Length: 192
Image (cartoon, rainbow, N blue to C red; front, side, top):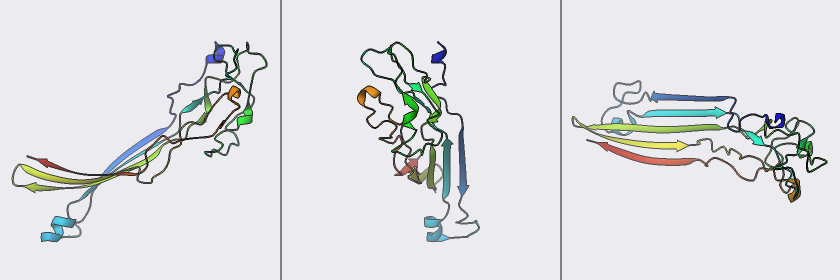
């Protein structure tokens, strides 16, 4: 049972979220005072920002995948696969740190989830810009432009931990991403 001791697969050690809202200083009665049509178009806008930063999740250890192995026998871990690894899509960790145990009836030394090898963390920035128009006493029209993943930063998925039985095809490589590319959303809302 001591070989089953590992971190939780959902463990995120560090995460940080910040949200800010700012009324742009443009429009009637603001730093850049506008009136009439200029105020109707350029005045009274508010910008919102949400930033989320985190480190990654631990990846699961490779399993041997031999035809006669001890349950889901994991590999032996002979070194720290993250130390000195380039952390690129083609080699996220050092694959030579994992070997097949000498016997199919001996459990591998790699823990279930690797605390020292984690997926790529998140660095997400979302922005929105909106303006509301009051129409009479109880009616309002709001226009909004939102952008998600403004920096268009790809967040890699977990690396491939295919078994030695499959010949370590793409072992340690990242084959996809886990977030969406930059997106824009335009909307309006009429309240009455």
